[in-house]
Length: 283
Image 1: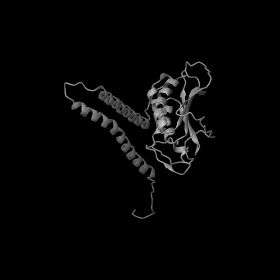
Image 2: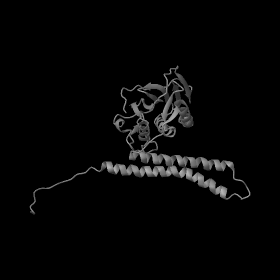
Image 3: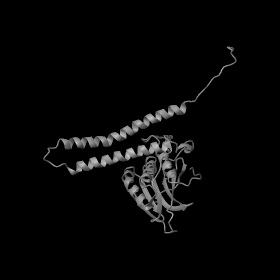
Image 4: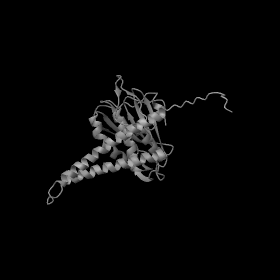
């Protein structure tokens, strides 16, 4: 009836929305830069070939460079589509029969040069070399690549990375990626699998590490693991390193198989890596 009876004050915290918008802008900027690199190569070699006299055949190395960078663009587009499907909850993977060792050696050979340049040692330990899993090779390469990428970026020169697979738990194969890096701060540990989350990485000397990226790697790895009906766990101590455990379903026809533990060291000849033994496993 026109009579004032009180006051209503509505407060809304827009921190998350503002942060989300900022991270999206950073993601667009990052992916634009990543796309520009192969596009520049493709355009450059295409221009060179167009300027070549018509009576001369194109040089094979130019065509190979164009093909190689076109494949990079294709992979990036597929990953962007996968990210969109992950966000929409429609992400799905193939159910192919894969030999885990074949998959892992292909991935490890792809990062060996980076590990050497970073001054790190890579050790590989394999139990049951012929063990088979059910999964999507392309998506698993993507996920495991992110785990190795993080291990490289957050481990200082002289450190070690251990890739170990073959142990089984509850019908799943376990893949462990262990590093002797700077570890994860307790305040960041509960959030590292959140999309776009990036914690504060500090070396034992107090220096801040800010490697390039927008915080989607662990989100992708966890989403791929769960799409395979598996999981991704982490155990870490700040200043002592981290262990990420990826559990993937074993092939249903797999028979019990036991073999001695075999190991290979790639990168350096100096001793055994220190393997952190944290108390907690976060999934």
